Length: 371
Image (cartoon, rainbow, N blue to C red; front, side, top):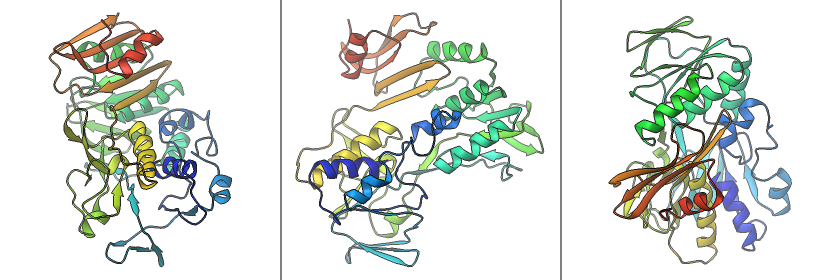
């Protein structure tokens, strides 16, 4: 996604043919990731519709798109990449290696009936799996787990959601919000197994750490990701919970930048380092690094933003709740239309909005306390 949005921004800035190349281990051109757990997974979107730009865009603007190439080495002094028997030279390099799914560590978890969701190919495989499954067990109570459980239930599968915490979306939702969403899911047939991890998978039976067993034709694990930093580390670039970058997204190696899920950047607005694993961050950092390399000198600033679609609900979240002193709601938290505001003093540090008036949503996007 970083590459796709950076390419569009470079073109807007007057890119000349031959000045930009994209090297990817993926088999597809840069594509949007949100549909992989939403519209593409449901079958409402196809491979062409999720591309950030069509094939003609890259051809018309002389952008080299080198797919199915696994880079094995970055030579920073020599300014070249090698891998798959090919060599690529660069003046400036943007590392957008993203993240890879954490995998289940339990007996039987290596079987074909256990799937993960990260790439377009993963989503296509999962989409086929949902069509042929009657009982589905989803592991993980975060964004991916909640979205996949929603799609599974909507496609008629008997769906169970298991997660290690006592409630879903614990890192983002308040207890009241978790209860509201869990009731919404339960009313649509999803069963919950809180405080549970996978202990073992034996045939169609999954043993959980809380002592329960779940029958499943298909197991989908959404248990988080880890940043892909091995290439950068081997090249001598500073790595710590991702690739460490400065306020201009430049790494410890001059002329080498990092963006997207892998970038550990200084958040100038909240005065802390963070690494964000979501669509908006990849889009904004891809656009930013293209502008920066085209001559714009401002530092990277962005309010962390997340969104999700589950069943017939769409919600958005802005900010950082870690320093909040209190929470206030507008609307009924037990309904499908409410907002939540995390406050420090009289200042909003985070906001959640679902089906709220435009003025309220706009205030939330700017973290302006809607008194």
